[in-house]
Length: 346
Image 1 (cartoon, rainbow, N blue to C red):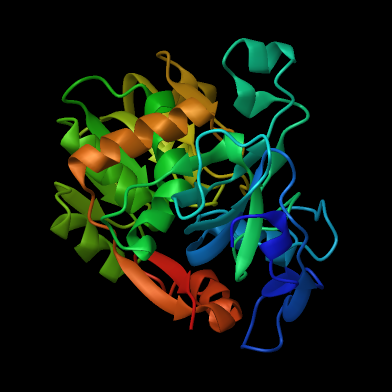
Image 2 (tube, rainbow, N blue to C red):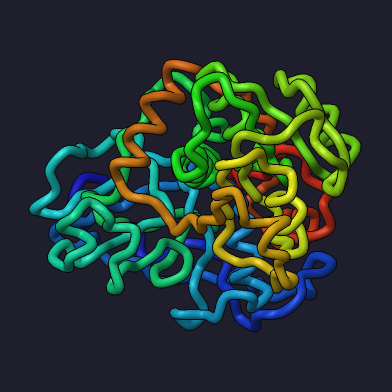
């Protein structure tokens, strides 16, 4: 399959039909259907999906925490697969290459944010699995300029989580401005956190993890964290920086109070429940900083994938057949996934 004429006529895919609470398989917001495929556009690639990570953002989209931006859109923005067809203007990919399709799907390229290297803030940005169909499917198309060339060696299910959980964790760590050798607090320990903690450790940092799950705390210690406690436990010593991965607004004052003077808390999620009223002297005084993290740039993606290829993080994967994506989201919602859920073809 190397031209638009060879594109299959349709592909099986999950779509968000009725945003709402996930539940038991067959009764949630996702519906499996056959969707028509057209050939890739001039700058697009058609990818046959080999694995797709299940991200908490997918859960927010399915449940309606994030308003739908495209009717009956297919979720999934951690897709790894093989290029099966390319558009006439594609540069950098050939048929048969391994490709990764991530969250950032397009930017305008001309606004002040794009021109200054901050394309993650582009007002006209578009996202995989939100604005255009994602990887909970047999095939998807992507703008080749926003896809990543991936190495041949690692299994697809180990690479998939790097494309969002890893990349957004990388940006969150950069935003947290952790000093060399400093103590990083990690609140929540799911897909992104377990990769980001390893990245910080590989850079020579110390890591303290705060999460409600006993199994997640055990994993944190296995991966090298020096401390693992409950979400509301005090740290062993004041934190030099912290990242909040759990979408729980009431943890913001908890994490800010745990910071040392001059420390920074980066909030990594796209969705967060309401933040309680902050006490200025307790939570922000002495130059403590609260920062958000918004998507990522392609430069972030390239930098993280290069660093991950060198440090080789352990990816704790729980595999689900593609046709069980609804069950994977239900397990994620109920905190039954330690590490990261990944969909694979049957």
